[in-house]
Image 1 (cartoon, rainbow, N blue to C red):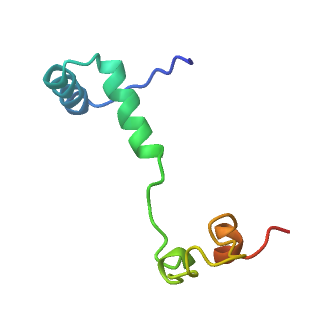
Image 2: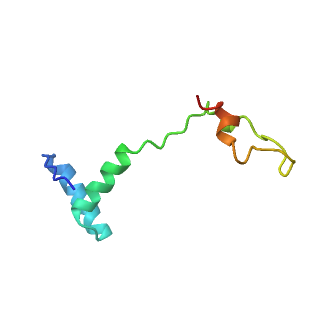
Image 3: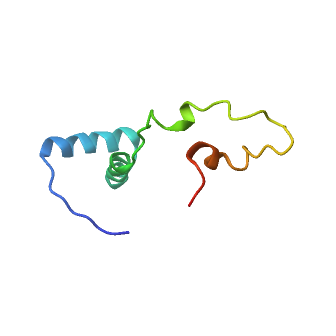
Length: 79
C-alpha cells in the first residue's frame, strides 16, 4: 500500500469521522471505500449491443456456438 496525505476542509473531515463512527470502521477504511466508489466506473452504455440483440439463438441447437462465442456474436470477431 502507498501512504497518501491530503488536506480536506473541516466539514468534510467531520462527515468522514461521523461515517467512520456510525459504521464502526477506521477512518482510513471509509476513505478507501470512498475513493474506490469514486474511481469505479459503473456506468452502463445503453448503446451496448447486449441490450438489443436478444435472443441470440436457440439453445441446444446442434452446432450452435453462441454460448461459447457470445462476444463474437455481439461485438464481432477479435482481430
